[in-house]
Image 1 (tube, rainbow, N blue to C red):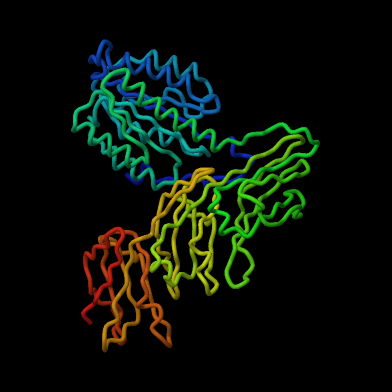
Image 2 (cartoon, rainbow, N blue to C red; image 1 turned 180 degrees about the vertical axis):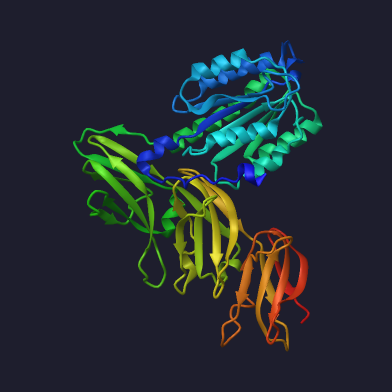
Amino acid sequence: MKKRIGWALAGLALAGAAWAAELPEAVFIVDASGSMEAAAGDLTKMEAAKGVLAHVVEGLPGEVKTGLAAYGHRRARDCEDIEILVAPGSRDRAAVLAQVAAMQPKGMTPIAASILQVAAALKGRDGETTIVLVSDGQETCGGDPCAVVKELKTTGIRFILHVVGFDVTEADKEQLSCIAEAGGGRYFGAGDAAALLAALQEVSREIEEKVAAAKTVMVRQASGLGKVSIAFPESAARSLAGFRIVRRDTGKTVKEGEFSANDSTHPLMSGDYALILLFANSNYKPPTEMPAGDFTVSKGETAEVRFGALVFNIAEELAKAPVEVLQITEHGTGREVLSLLPHGNAYYLFKPKALPPGTYDVAAQYPRSEARAVLAEGLEVTAGRETVVTLDSGFSVVRPEGTKVMAWQLIPSGTDTPLLEIRRRWDNEHPLWAVFPVPPGTYDLNVEVDGMEEMLPVGEDLVIPSGQTLRFETGL
C-alpha cells in the first residue's frame, strides 16, 4: 500500500499573492455500478444522481475548479473500470455536465482504487480539494477504502472527503461512514433524489464558505496608492508583538509596528512584499519572527491577507511542563512554520497563534531530549476562524525511593519510537518527575537506572485517557 500512495506533496505555499490559486476545488466520484440501475422513488438511482449532480455543479461558485471521476460506467464485472473523466482543476463545467449525462450504470464498485486514482491526479495541486463520493454500496473489489483514505491523509495531500450513501444498507453505511471520517469529512445518507439533493447542497454550502474565507479580494480604491488589509481572529492578538512588511526586490523594511486592531489596513506603493509576523516573548526577549507569506499591491487596489488562529485549550498543570521548544509544523511535510521558546517564562507559549490557512501539527521538545513529542496532528486552520487544540491528558513518573533513575521513555504501544525521552541533569533530577502533556492512547514505559546498561520495561499497555493525567509508580 505504501508503495502506491507514499508520495508527499510539496509544502503549502504561503504567498498571499497566490492565495487565489489556493481556492478550494471539488472533485466528484460517481458510482456507476450496475446497482445504480435500481429504482429510488420514481427514478432510477442513476437518473436521480445525474439530475442532482447537474444542479449542484452548476450552482458551485464560479471560482471553484472541478473534476469528475466514475467507476463501473463502461464494463460489467471489471474492477479496473475506473476513469478520470474530467481532470481536477478544470474550469469547463460543460464538460463535467456532459460526462455526467452520458454515464450508464454497468459494473463493479472499486471504491479504494478510485480514490487512489483521484489522489494521484491531485498531486501538485496547491489548494485544498473537496472530494465528494456518491455511492449506493460498499467496496466490491476487495479493497479497503477506509484504510486507503487514512494513509492518504498522512501524505500531505490537501483534501477532505465527503461521502453520500444513496439508498444503502446498514453494512454499506458502516464502511462509507468510515471513509468519510478518515477523510475528515461527513457522511450523508439519502434515500431518494430529494434527499440526495439536500446532501450535496450541504456540501456545496461548505465549499462556498471556504471560497469566501480563502480567496484574495481586490477592492478598487480611489487613492493612487495601493493597500494591504491584514486580519486575524481577535484572540490571536494576545501573542503578537507586531509585524514587518518588507519590499521583496530590495529587502528594505517599509513598515514595522504593532497591530492597532485585529483587522488593519496599510497604504503601500505598488509592488511585491513579504509579511513577517512578530510573536511576543517573555523576559524582554526580541520577538520571534514568522514569515507569513508574500503579497502584491497594485494601484488603487487592496490586497487582503487573512489568517486563522490556533487556540490552545491546555490544562493548567500541563501548561507548566518543562517545554524548551514549542513547534508548529506543516502537516505532511514537516516544514517548520513557527518555533517558540519560553525564555524562562511560559506565559506566551500557549497563547493563541495567528497562522495562514493550512493543516498543522504541534510538537514539544524537552530538556536533553533529541525527540520531538508530537502533541496534536492534522489541525485545520481556516482564515478568520479559531481552531482549538485541546491538550488535557498527561503523564508523569512518580519518584521511586532509593533508586537513582537516569532517564525514562514513554513509547506508544506497538511501536519502537518514543513519544517522550526524558533524561535528568548531571547535577539534579530535573525534569524526571514533571507532568508532560501527551495525546490519549496506550503506552509502554522503559526506565534507565544508574549502573545498568539497558533500560528496564517497567510498564506495558498503560492507558492514558482523554482529560486525565496518569501518575505511574514504577515499583523500583
